Length: 191
Image (cartoon, rainbow, N blue to C red; front, side, top):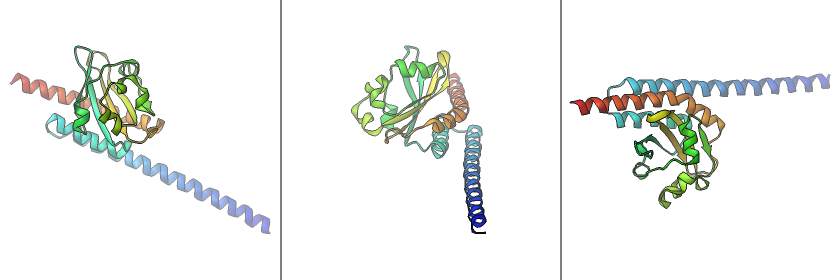
């Protein structure tokens, strides 16, 4: 009889663990869905382009838990320039694509555990390297109008494959926000 009680206790513990995992997964999916809806709301609100991007980055911050983020756009000379950033320091950086960024520009996301090991990051001022240890690089567009979303954290090895998957899922929203901002900028220049 005691043996049967032990087996029942084990079965009950396993069922409770399965239930806890299911609840955790459900909560994660709920947060992801809510963030997607919030991102869509940002896209349809009429607002100035940099404000729209900042609001979208705030939505992404809830999901990806990054500290800072910025969007780089390729310029005619091949360099990458921030179009929006969560900090003024990142907004003033200029980037020359080397191995890592070239790969991201062809559509392959990259997680960097220590930015000091990456040539593009080594070219940045020491103040930037003091505030960033790990980074997530997600392509937003390819070709001549290429763009990259970069999320950063001060903790080494912060980003993982789950962050990368989530960022890829939300890259469509960021791409659309970028397109909307460019359209708005063109309309302003025409008038």
